[in-house]
Image 1 (cartoon, rainbow, N blue to C red):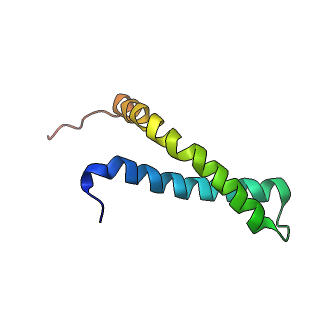
Image 2 (cartoon, rainbow, N blue to C red):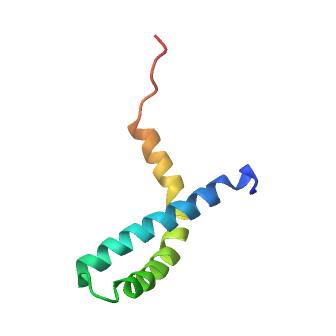
Length: 78
């Protein structure tokens, strides 16, 4: 198993993997339809999307955490 100290990288990896896979499939079907070679088209798009998504999530996630902190307020215990 992977150490918990690598949580951010492992989280980013799986988030990029799943989001790029889903989004590339949806966009591929939207652009070309359900053609016979959609799996090949999708896998090519997915590999490119993942290469972009993983480093993007690593860089952007601290900014997103700060934005979330600005938007949310602390709840009182009473």
